[in-house]
Length: 300
Image 1 (cartoon, rainbow, N blue to C red):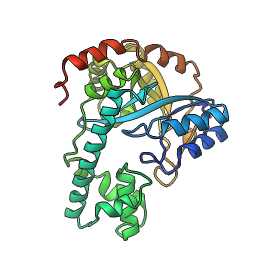
Image 2: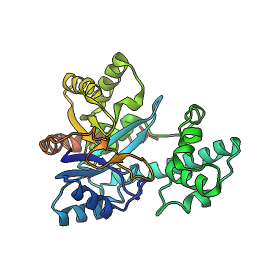
Image 3: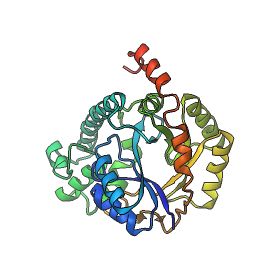
Image 4: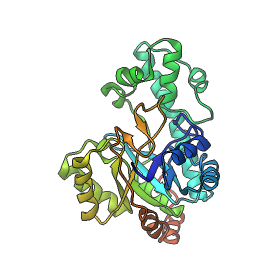
């Protein structure tokens, strides 16, 4: 069982549990260090931090940003300043892009014979953030599928769905925003890129040149063989090794549990990761802000 889990989601994005409940689950799982990394938003950080402090769990403020790539590519940000103007600007842009993706996903589903309104989807979310789990829940409620996993298997994680244009920021924009907010940027679940060894090696090298600081080598579904491959890449590219379950709650990601992942595969107990991330977080913040201010049209 892990005592460190740096990849947790709350219902401020697409998780099933409130920030306070996630921290209570973390405490019950024996965690000593954790991070909430909600998708494209920092709204759950304050409540998570307060609950973690009350329970005596060390807490790292985080975010997970979806970026443009051939396949899913997510960049985690640790030790970010949620009140930083650049991070606020990024989150506003992420929300606008996410709303556009929701509209495109509903249009895609309409072509598949699944007719849902934005209002039906919003009724499944506790706040303004809308994602695929909320669409899946709306599909279940409307009777199109018997369970959310069926919604993903048949529609929301299908090959046809992933061919649908879904605008996202580029990796460099996300990494720059994280660094400008005083944070450390980490590549999440590298297997989702679906690259072979050489291609992934080249890709990580390019991300490293953009300022990537770490890679998630320990993950809720990785066995020892997968971990070993990513650990070699981390060593080669001088990246901080991180780990997390990617917990969303049983209703969203069945079988993925805090601190253990799937079937106990997560075993990350390196408390020193906190200091290593802190050491690289924000070390060139002033330099990054200077670049952004001198080239405001760069990511327009």
